[in-house]
Image (cartoon, rainbow, N blue to C red; front, side, top):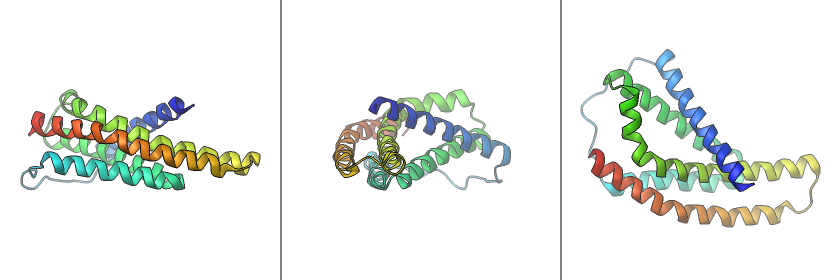
Length: 169
């Protein structure tokens, strides 16, 4: 059951990233990069990713807000890929191979965090639709699982930040 929710969240993230790319490619506003991209340290990258995963995980307790933040983050990544493609004339294959090495850990952490939103939404759905008793027990178990996910995300995001800093920095 848990694997199904992680796979579903992964599919939603991929579709949302693709939608962001498609919409920006076809309807995007004119944007010209100014200056150079700022240098980010490994710790800056890790803290940004960890903050995003933590916010998604904590908002997952409420169900929908965590899912919204995760999908809006994925949409922004799609727009970023589109703009790199358009303004720096970088082929999609090059962008994909540059994102893949560090993106696998980030994608796994984002999928795990998003799956909590889906599971909690399912608990609430079952409670209101089928009148199951005591959804509190399931929600408390899910909250403990959220903290486990945040702890599991730390090494994933650390490795991703190190790869991103030293592979592309």
